[in-house]
Amino acid sequence: MLNREHILEKILDEVNEGVHVVDERGTSILYNRKMEEIEAMNKHDVLHKNIAEVFHFPSDQDSTLLQALNKGVSSHNVRQTYFNAKGKEITTINHTFPIIQDGKIHGAIEIANDVTKVERLIRENILEKGVIKYTFDSIIGESSAIKEVIHNAKRAARTSSSVLIVGETGTGKELFAQSIHYASMRQAAPFLSQNCAALPDTLIEGLLFGTMKGAFTGAIERPGLFEQSEGGTLFLDEMNSLSIALQAKLLHALQERVIRRIGDTRDRKIDVRILAAINEDPIEAIAKHHMRKDLFYRLGVVTLFVPPLRERKEDIILLVDHFIKKYNRLFQMEIQGVSREVHQFFMDYDWPGNVRELQHMIEGAMNLIVDEPFIQYNHLPIHHLRKKVKITEASDPSASMMWSPSQTLSKELKTQVEEFERFYVEKTLKEFGGNISQAAKQLGISRQSLQYRLRKFRE
Image 1: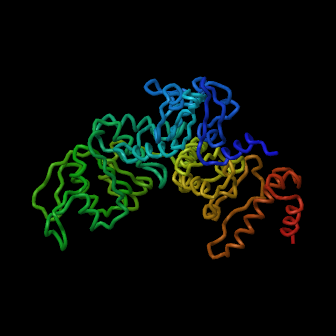
Image 2: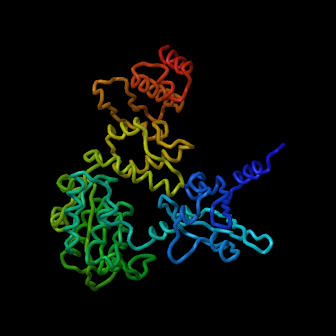
Image 3: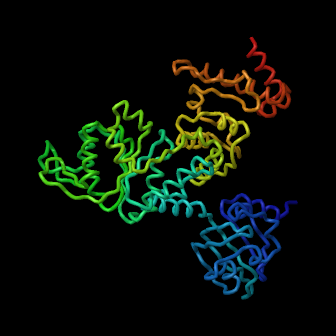
């Protein structure tokens, strides 16, 4: 004969709403699986305990369950934020009502929907769209190389002098620029950013200095970025991509503190701090005529050299953790970290794309994960693995059994996948000293399947 209580428990565990029932003393007597997920609690830590002992509510509000129990009041679609026994913040939308029999309250029932992740994403979206996007607290790293740059940048934030930020693509130059602005006396004024390589000179000049109606066909009267950032900061990224002629006009604006719109006959005074960035060594930029020497001296009152990621590899794990947490929030995932093999790959890789490449690699990998708690080697985006990368093993510098993805894009995908499979299998086998069983377990395949692959590779 079927047990009714067992049937009820099974049904409640399958519904997509959290269900929590307390008796007349406030002791939990029913707590389904969905409620465990919502409140990140184990039912054994909740059942047969008073709700006030397990959960904590802000001083200005009481538990909706206890309100129903103590006052006999039903409530619908009530938003409630509280904390579980571990201190984790929970936000739910609740339907709560008392259990009344013979005119007496015998308990209360709550049906809850989880909005914790939604609330968190809304708050983060508001912050993202706010005025301040990056500050010095946004810069991830504990290496001496990055700490020195942060220290010098904070000093530069105290003045209104021009700053030249030098660094390879993807090192975070704009992050430093915004951090300097928001730590300066100009933080309440505008911060505007323009990538000088994004537009041709004919357009960038009007964008920077403004235009007057009739200056050229279709021209309208419009202030440029210098005027729009009045009192604040203008960040010119990839400034070395500007033509030498336009650099001369920029130098004049910096020295005289005036600009003239295209088609205008009068100068306009400006009060703007200029932060500029280049992605090559300034000495080489001058030698190759990518940058005027006098402009370099005018901009480089303070020069910050942001180190590439390969020169601060001790920061990689901090950055990986930061990006995993970021995409856990955005994708509503719970990835815990990277595998030992991925960690070793990250430490061996030269990172030509720097921090930006690392971020994109983490994002790409997390798009490929289904249920695994860790990013594995096979989750790394294939286009990263195709690059000409010299992979070395710190534990065995003489290792030759490494896959160097130097194949061109002309190769068929099947061929590239087979070559990568061979590299991955043989590398795993070597890690376990040739032990077929252990290597197969690590690869997630049977011993026979691994032996088949090895025979195929040796044919």
